[in-house]
Length: 287
Image (cartoon, rainbow, N blue to C red; front, top):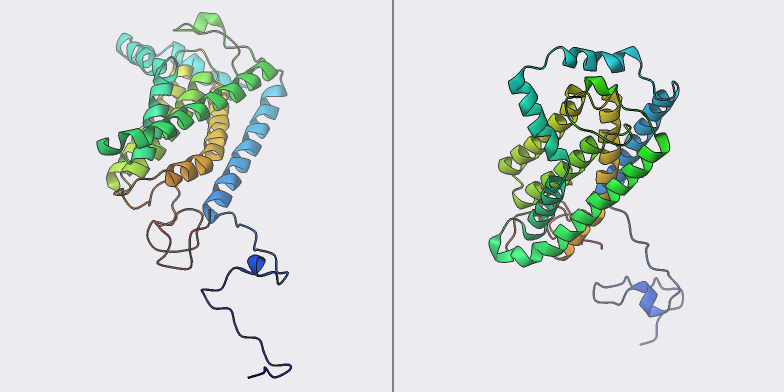
């Protein structure tokens, strides 16, 4: 039977090849960035802008502190009982040496293996990627310290050893980045209350390290705030590719992915509203 001229063409069936494979001249739809990635990048830009504003304030006096920046150190010098001073020194060491790398590697391993011993090998590549993210953050922070070359508080106020420039704080930045990576891994391994509790503890540890630097007299408060802002920006930029890598290497039997991306079980790049395969809602997962 011949077709009637001007008849409406039949709609494409689900089994037909995609438009770009049929030669009809319709280009394929460009891949869409996930809402998770857009949100995270938006927050990273906001933190970068906040850091730039803080840096401008620091530079207005060539690094010399404003009174609100110097007052906490003056208070700390007069309030250092032996037990608290010892505790502060113990806490501050968590922001340097091997500890941030161990925390970052553990976070990457948890994120890649979902905390299952049977899938330990699956977490190794993600652990290496998390450590690489920490190293990248430290390179950025070192460059910022050299660029601003801000002087530390007077050495007479120090209660621990310190070296190098002051802004942004290296201990605060490294501990915040490592704590964020560990929290990400904990939320992927245990998406429920246990993972959220672990994430809160990670954040509290990073805050404690930053505050210890001021209490020990080796950083101005704005140094610590700058370290948190720079680390937060680097962390947010690292999370989307880290999450995509972990999901691409996922092994069967893990928990539903309702973790740090906050998209209710979606695969982060899809439109579905259902489980980890994104097929219970509005469409398939897009790589």
